[in-house]
Length: 252
Length: 308
Ligand SMILES: Cc1cc2nc3c(=O)[nH]c(=O)nc-3n(C[C@H](O)[C@H](O)[C@H](O)COP(=O)(O)OP(=O)(O)OC[C@H]3O[C@@H](n4cnc5c(N)ncnc54)[C@H](O)[C@@H]3O)c2cc1C
Ligand SMILES: Cc1cc2nc3c(=O)[nH]c(=O)nc-3n(C[C@H](O)[C@H](O)[C@H](O)COP(=O)(O)OP(=O)(O)OC[C@H]3O[C@@H](n4cnc5c(N)ncnc54)[C@H](O)[C@@H]3O)c2cc1C
Image (cartoon, rainbow over all chains, first blue to last red; front, side):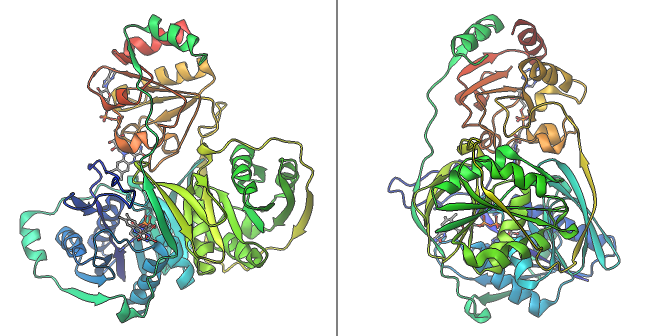
């Protein structure tokens, strides 16, 4: 079985984002970019499937600017076999919407015929939480989102999902789309020799046009603003003082 | 202009708080029809009919809709979509599973976690863990939206909408339910509680979490946790508050042994009053706290429980 893992290049989760003064967006020039943390977990899961003999090949794909190459190289260094870069934008500030990403991924799936797509549950920049579900709808495949545990059992996958009430386990027919949550695994770091080796692994470059997908956004960004700041608070010196303040504020 | 709202129905029961908050957001867009889908959903439909502002309720009962599997639920909603310009739901994990699928079936974008309605096409939503608010204008003919419930007040009761039974959509039979692991609790639900007491890595162990729970019970509060506390096995996953957990905005949020990473703040910084108890005076949580106490939580939390 082949596993396809879409990986997104996003602002590093440790970076405090700054909204541009003119409200046109978030400043992404010269900030550290990394692989979306959820996608690291998806790549790790694919590698573990391969190590367990349940997958033969891992193909990673990223859609966006040319610089997403670095993200793909990271995935290759972790252990993916092959990468596809779909260039769909030339400005780092242009993000491709999940619907367009899902349409491109559907074409890649047609070509590659994977038995499983492992995606992140959400990208930490736009927090849209949509791409996997949309891809699954377009392909007419089964979907299992927010996975914290998964196992492959013949032609189906058994997936435990993190939901509001606790955990839900479902069994989905393969081929399937699984989107991964934080507690599925702890991704490995790429070793230096593997980083060197990854430079020689195949990375195909395509464009959105090659797949005939229109990436024109459906959502126009009117403006981006800072959230309202909280008024400064005070430090209290003791539990007694805290209790008094809470009573004063009518909070207890 | 008409709105179809997917009610949150779990095992036949309506989650009234989440649904009523979404109704408040949806009312601004047009007449609201609520869809209650499930293996049993009639009682949920009757409850939804009483929410103020609901014009009509559709009840779809079918075994295939029993566990909110994405494929049959999305197929049902897509089959009803013709009559509506907005298809909306509260941003629960169930809806986040289903609604993007609905959007793709209709070839439109989804708008997740919307926190404000500007007009019928224009919406506000938090991005980057709530560090920026984006206003977006949709050019799609139909808008598929999930509403962040913590930013809307629940609609009251007093409605008397008509209730109509409808059939299920096509079940492609791709998924089956195996089991649910849901911890029963007498405490209020995290996302609707007036008070939340959360513990972080500083609490140290599952046993020590009893300290947090005692304080919560004294206040009639829900219990929350940081990701670190959940990852370490101190607390179950459904207690996680944050960017990738639940978003809460209670009247009072007490954080003990939580450092205040942006991903945690994303889930609680809209709380009315925030109390932070941390032994490190440099902890970033103090920057958002209304009342900060630099103290060892093992002393301060029991003392607070006693004195409140
Ligand atoms: C700086 C910036 C500028 C933007 N500019 C515009 C604009 O001009 N116009 C506009 O309409 N919208 C713009 N947007 C919004 C954007 O188009 C979408 O809202 C955004 O993509 C939301 O989805 P997500 O990336 O959070 O995807 P999610 O659905 O949350 O992602 C889930 C998973 O899907 C996969 N995935 C997602 N994207 C990719 C990808 N590109 N390649 C490979 N895998 C992927 C990954 O596995 C990921 O974990 C902008 C966003 C940003 C951050
Ligand atoms: C993609 C992604 C998503 C994430 N999503 C979330 C999310 O949804 N929610 C979330 O919470 N996190 C999330 N995180 C994790 C987040 O970045 C932090 O790692 C996490 O919030 C830290 O939890 P903590 O504050 O409990 O632990 P720590 O940062 O380790 O802080 C523990 C605190 O306890 C204090 N302490 C220790 N002992 C005591 C004592 N005896 N008395 C008083 N204080 C004490 C310490 O001073 C310290 O400040 C996410 C991270 C990533 C990468």
